[in-house]
Length: 326
Ligand SMILES: [Zn+2]
Image 1 (cartoon, rainbow, N blue to C red):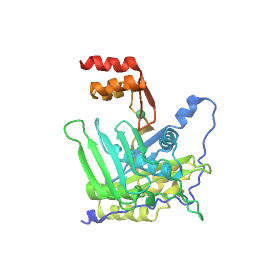
Image 2: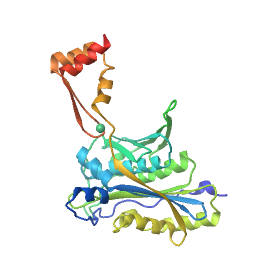
Image 3: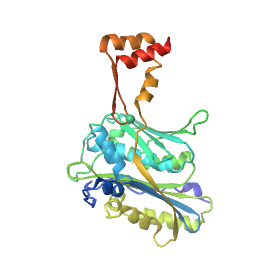
Image 4: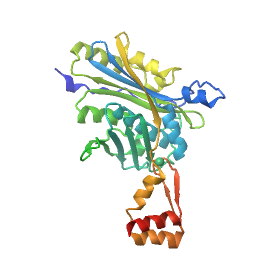
């Protein structure tokens, strides 16, 4: 069997990077919420040899852009990292938390994301202000601003020590880096495509992706058929530009092969921060530092790195913490 040779990847660089998704404009926010919910659809080939996930992550990346005020390149880099994390989390069960750290040495700095198995993801990019496009095509440039470094995945099953797994960054385009990670570190031949397309104002127009994996039951001719189809697949950016990119992705992945839909699950950018959580963090500080916050600043403010929500702690909050420690 030549199972481990398979490392296929669908080119994902945004061409033109301009696509307008057809959005239904209804004034009722209730309908907006339903229509605009992100989702992942899990499928398996009729033979049971190949599985595929397809994702609509548009609202997730849109929320990330709004929270972090990211410029074009930073939006795409952070967005792709969030989608990569959604894909990795989809492979986990139970109360697992997956952290993805894209640790490059270029302008973006680190890109950090955390996802759970309930469809929630949060994340940030150290430098939200990178905004570089190719003059001729308008293509948003990502890879060079990630640079060289590591793609680190931390899997926390909530038991003992979280499991760390790391591969080198292949191109800094994130999709290729994830495909390499899955194939190298998880020993599962995988094809990944993911991208974020921006509109003329550099707002998120559409974001999403797919994962195709070869399962142990796959027959060689089935693998070859999917491999060929994925190699000949249109660029992910053009599939994402389709009116219904979920269906376009499924059609491109399966072609004439029969498949089953196993589940459809909601995805969202959701941060689990709270005043209580930061109160607990503050409570680990020594009393003299807490006292200094009272004396010098008459309180403290903490801004959540993942969602930029500010939390204010007044003198009474800090005095409560001090009294708990004495
Ligand atoms: Zn937060």
